[in-house]
Image 1 (cartoon, one colour):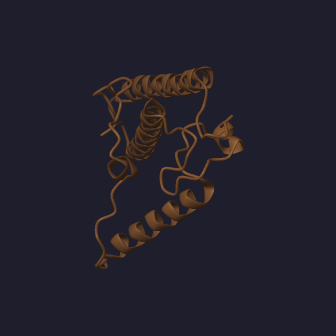
Image 2 (cartoon, one colour):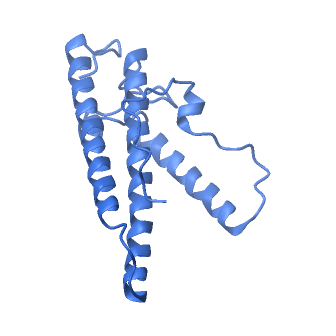
Amino acid sequence: MIHRNGSRSACENREVRIRLTAMAEALDLRQDVLTSAWDSIREEVVDEVDRALHNSEALFGVALVSAIREARASIAHALAILDAGGYGSCEDCGSPISEARLSFRPESTRCLQCQDLADRRGRASLELVDRGEPTNRPRLVSRHESAGARIISLRPFSSKHPA
């Protein structure tokens, strides 16, 4: 719970840190399972059906690795904001993030309105790049860059991943 002065108690911060760390550990476990599964399917491809299945699994594995990295970056960013004393306040507009949102997504660092706006900007930027149209706008930077927060590496990723 955020108090009137916008801060959280040390006990509440400790609980948030424990939850975020547990989430990061769960992602580490998923990464390990994915890596071992990928290692087990790297066998000789016999025919075209096996090759197609192998390619499909490889693309899916790359997508999973990307999702895990993005989720871990969000958790590391939230931990950095927690360390800086700003957890629970939107990093864009400064308004409090609802307790329901933080309960559901403890890695949230933006209020719903600012997150929606950021998501729209991200989609619009991707759409322009996909069509090859020039943007005439400054490059959008990640929220990690724009916030100037240091990124905390919870555990280095394995160098073994689908390529």
